[in-house]
Length: 482
Ligand code: NAD
Image 1 (cartoon, helix red, strand yellow):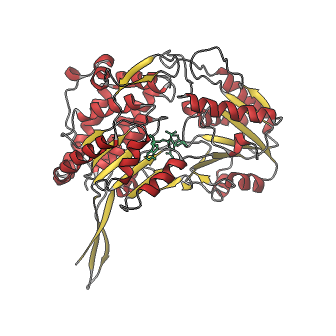
Image 2: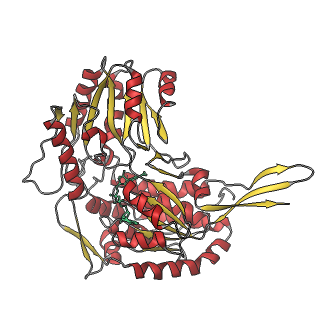
Image 3: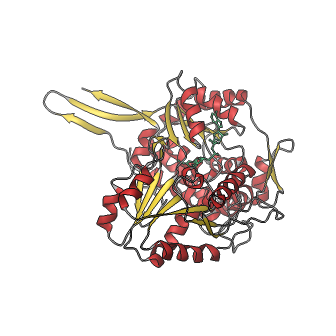
């Protein structure tokens, strides 16, 4: 594989879709209503597919796969770069649709950021080299490791970062010569259909096909004999179902599942210096992020100061409808998630924990808004700590001995990310090495980068995404010996 040297510029100006034209191209008048979680208004209507639609989609992409794989790598690279250009040209329309459907604000690390990340990830995936590896080269043997396309990839995604996660799944798959069937979350199909529509403006027919629908559509993809690999991001429970349903066909799987990331604050920190990082580590996308900081362990020496500084930041962050430019926090995406957050905060309050800010949603207000909530003096056994809240409510647990903090961080059966916060990098790295998580950040939490491998341990899943490791994950290794 080669690094791209030439980008073919595309004249997208004349064909840039408006919000209305983009929505019209993916909407079906008889389809299921998709509601704005901030207002309850109908955003659009989507014709949900059936398992038989999956069969037809798989047939189409299977037929297109050999020709796609036969193209030189440089051509696929060029098309990914043109897809990035097309996304950028449609960025405002895509961001508006994402904001309306998912709820996330246009500004802050939200809708515009997500659309920008889609273009950036496509470009980085196009630029990632994956050279043939010569593993033995002596007088008797010459052995090389090549990476061939796996064939047809099924991409099943969640509703929290619907566009970005779709790109994470499809960009490496396409680059490696696979064709793809995408199954978006039933909560956010419009965003993904719009993204696929824009990308398909530059791709050949039948290389990338989306089938919106319920879980049964994902289940058919993950058991289908014509699908060779499933990229899945979602809950651990669904990941387990996919493992079971993929067994008969021995599919390759990448599973990015739920997390309950711990952050450990060591006693030497300056609370004011870390507090913005802590806040956004926990509250990015209003807490609906797989690798968000979901339980914070703070040394007793700095506990009160960290809590006070965090409360100040949390109170200053505007929450509201995503299309209002000043907001940086939005609603929960759906009622079920709102109920989970409300239940966990209520349970913490009833147990005697202290609500520092938030915890008081307005039952009369429209939309699934739950205020940014900080819960102090909470026991490590409390459900708000032990269960994934996936929303804007952060429990803050006090500790005195760092060994106890490490034990508490490691006690759960998930391990996506973790973080350590300290003025002493070596001390932080020593604690990081003891944490059971796929990524440990130091003095930040949750940042991902297209060249840095990302994946979980324990029940947070297996397989790596991004960079050369991500390309290998959507390929099959082949040794040429001789
Ligand atoms: P979910 O598991 O409910 O749904 C994810 C997708 O799986 C949806 O498209 C759904 O329709 C589909 N699905 C449902 N049943 C299926 C089945 N039997 N077979 C195949 N597909 C099926 O997850 P969600 O509620 O959309 O997302 C939230 C969860 O995802 C959280 O736990 C979060 O931590 C996790 N998540 C993880 C990452 C990561 O990178 N590790 C990223 C985002 C979200």
